[in-house]
Image (cartoon, rainbow, N blue to C red):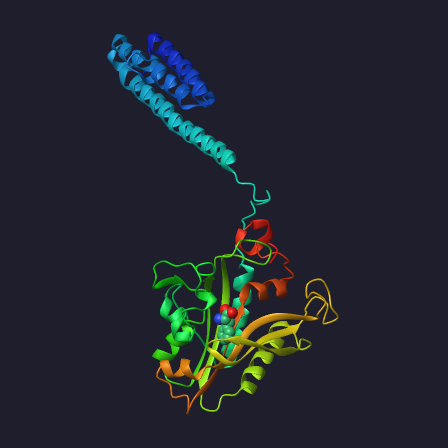
Length: 351
Ligand code: PHE
């Protein structure tokens, strides 16, 4: 094109092109969403777009003007396309930021409080009892709640006509099968399986057909203890139980034995402990005696040992069976046994 000046028509077209380009650039840069951007693209670069139509009209130019004009149109097209994609980025980024702002998490808002589970007071007391006895070399065993009448009664030297066998006290499944009325059936079960020395505690649920009130429930819990070895005496029972009670409730608690009767121990006793409420002075809880009954106990009856294949000439043993519910109520100052079974979360949360 050297030296040649453009024709008048070409000059006019250049002016037109400049105007189109300026409008296009301005509209694109003002677009704020993808729709507007697409409208711009169609308006200028689409099949009937202004730049496309302009390109077609170049046929009217004299041939010598066409190369320059072609170049200018292409440059204009490039600039519009460049700005379109640049603006597209701008819009997308703005949309992304908008979304992030909406999804922003306020970490200063107080959290929702999760309810944390707690151990039932019975479980807590039992854990403590297990800890104490395991420290004394006992192991923990368990037995069935649905029990042969044989183990619940016969093996324990409880005669056929004993009132404990009465249907008024015992839930019978069949004539031979009962819901165990105490954890003592696990004594003969243990003695049949294990040769002395034996040192076990046996916690578990027991059943008696009692009506529900503040101190009775048809299902409650006992912890049985059994020791069998050579030379075991009543002194061992007294020493062991006293140590246990002092560990559970404190050194200031005394124990005393009261004569009693169980068919499977001889001699038999009820073990009382200093009332935890009044410290022995006498109050409503201990019925003014200063003492609270904790456990049945005694020296394992020779007939019971013998039935289990343990020679009563060589071995002797002691056993006790205490009410876990009563013990728990003492420990936590609970005055109604029903609270232990209702599982009201407002009650349980306090422990
Ligand atoms: N099993 C007896 C009861 O339930 C308690 C007991 C256990 C007594 C062991 C003596 C020895 O009352």
